[in-house]
Length: 205
Ligand code: G3P
Image (cartoon, rainbow, N blue to C red):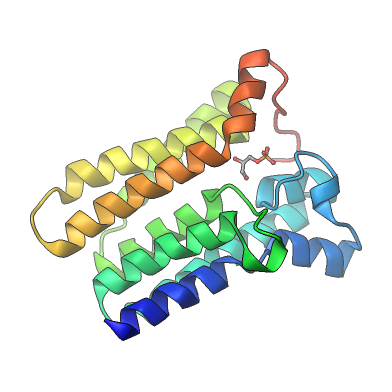
């Protein structure tokens, strides 16, 4: 359907807004792609520019997904789900930043947050990734590892919780697994660094 396709396109464009680049350039006159991990995400903004910048980037990256999904759910719940995925893809491969973006952690959280409110009125599945993130971060001090574990745990939990035969639950299960694959694929250099023992540990949280 035409409206759904337009929402998905809007999701990709909103996801493409590189807030780590925008906030870094506008408020700190710094292109964070040249520092730290070079990633356009909240973690690297926090690492390079400080806690306030990191949190601001995370908030805006979450909000762009919430906005896109809020608009798309006016068309249908399924449009909301696929628009959320498009937003994550836009965040990782932004048309406004030469297709070099972030790692889809905040945007996946935004998807989970939005679907829990706009689609399913059930926030329980936010607790699983959130708890996993905190525990892994506390144990290993790697934001990257905590993010990947959070993504996997949320998809497992959503699969168990939503397994059913209506088009919305099947869509949310497939979309969350695709996001999880995207999150892990975008962390492939982090995985190599973890193996070598040279991955960054958190210092600003
Ligand atoms: O924000 C994504 C996080 O999981 C890793 O970011 O900059 O340490 O590669 P970074």
